[in-house]
Image (cartoon, rainbow, N blue to C red):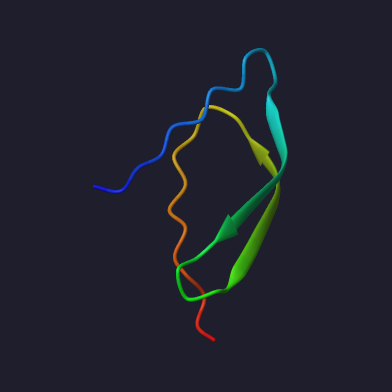
Length: 45
């Protein structure tokens, strides 16, 4: 299980989340609602 938990305090939205994968790919997710579980897969090159 590779889950990561982020505490947002009183915020209800994550405006931007940047993921840097071991392969060097950078993935940016925007405007995600709080209180959910997201599955994020590494994009192909």
